[in-house]
Length: 210
Image (cartoon, rainbow, N blue to C red):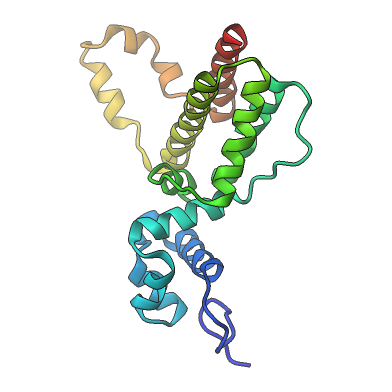
């Protein structure tokens, strides 16, 4: 049986899952800047309108991709304590983002009201509510944790392409004395340690608030 570029057998109906797979394959090969409705259609060997029928817009395509990325995050086997649950969810979220080239950049640019994304948020808010947070505090703390993970992971994934020469030149002028004294730590790329440090700061604040 002959197949399309993506390995989808000829004659197989195109669905949202196939669109997401093709988009993620394109992401893995060429990065976030290369992702477009037209590029996904070309990869699938179909017309743009066929892809648009499933995703409606470029934003819809990105939301579908974001949800597929988050779907790689398991919600099973979480610890019992609410703060350990929140920590583990943040760790798994970061891991799911790192599993895809430019994964954080794709997810950060969306507001996907899709099943996997909503299930992740549900689990995190449930854990925070179990810690005694009000409905508002739990919702806003969920945003805080998600934004923290997205921001640091996006920096981590871009670090290989971000030369430090510009920062070094700027600090050499002497115009930023405090930054100069902390330069070794600003340039530190031990993202696992930075992630744990920031996550613990957030969780410590939430424990005091709960």
